[in-house]
Structures are given as structure tokens and as C-alpha cells.
Image (cartoon, rainbow, N blue to C red):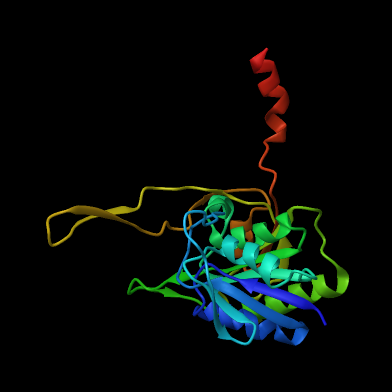
Length: 257
């Protein structure tokens, strides 16, 4: 039986997590280790200053007390899979896109990144949301769950298409399956960031800030993930752990001389 390990960064109660579990359960034995609370935008952080504890939620389902997605995968691989590594790690389904440079912030992507550092094939999956007129965010997970099953089945049956220390970052547009245009292999788009920090004052007169969400604003990028999402495609972006800017090595060497 194939072994699938799942985590996320929205917390163990997230509807995206539970939708993912049900989507891939027919493909093998599913083990879940997820953060006890939301850890969005925590990046690839490990917890080094306090102890961590597995808390059983259900059969093969654990929440990690105050842990990050990277903690979840790191400890699961060393505590729950001591004899045999899982065949696949899936991180998600995240509420919100992880496009462009967002992959550096994303706890969802970090969960998958931790897996490939330990030679386990991994997918990060995120659901794009649409802001409504009343200021809330709407999303439909039906296409994402369909894609999760299809991509996981393809990996488990046909092998992982990427080399060592590479993960697959998947973003799903907020559309119904009947509007789906297909899959598109993409590169990370160039995202435009702004400062969305909101200044407030508490009842004691102390100033504090609350960071908001940035709008999805991108420069046009050839074969970009944002362009694919906007056109109704699911974007498949290969991501590598090697952050070296290889194109700049020679230029930097000349500059140093």
C-alpha cells in the first residue's frame, strides 16, 4: 500500500486540509501531521527554542502543538516513518495563492520543501481565493481536490518527474471544474508588493500593527504562474531548494576581480 503524508499551514481544522485527505484517501494509507494553529507565512522555519508534542486527533491524524509545517514533516519522518519513508508528501490545500515570490513566505511550500530535503517526493497545493464585495474571500475546492487526486495518482503510479531537492508547487484558480482549461507548466511570476500594515491603538493607548493581505498584482511574466491562473489553468511550477543565482556567478566573479 502506498504511504501518503499530509500537512498544511492553515491548521489541523482547515477545510482545505480535510478536503485533501478525502481526495487522496483512495490512493493509499494517509497520515496527517498538521500545525495545531494557523502558521500562514511562517516560511521554512523550525522550532528550536521549545519542545514540540504530537497530539492525536484521529487514527493516523496528529496535530503538532505550536509546530510549523516544516516541524510537522521533519518530526513525522523521524518519528512516524522510521522504517520506511512515505511515497509522497502533500502540503495543503492552502487557502490562498502561493504564486511568484510568495513561495519564500509560504508555510505550505515549506512543508513540501522539508520533505524533498529528506528525499521524499512532495507537492505543495494552494487554492486561489476571490475577494467578494463585502470584503470576504470566496473559494471552491472542487477543482483543487480533483487536481490533488490526479497529481498524486500520477506520482504514485508513474514516479516523480523532478530531480532531487525539487518540489512541485501547484496553484488552482477559483473556478468550477467545467471551466477548467487544463494544466500548464509555469515559472514563478514577478509579484509586486506593497506595504499593507495597518496601524491601530489598543485600549491602553499602545500602538500596534496588523499586517494585511496584498492584492494579486504581478508584472507580465512569460509562462508565469499568475498568467496561467488568470486564464483558467492550474499552474504547475517546479521549485528547487538551490537558491543560487547561477546566471550571476560569472558576473560576480568579474566584479570581485
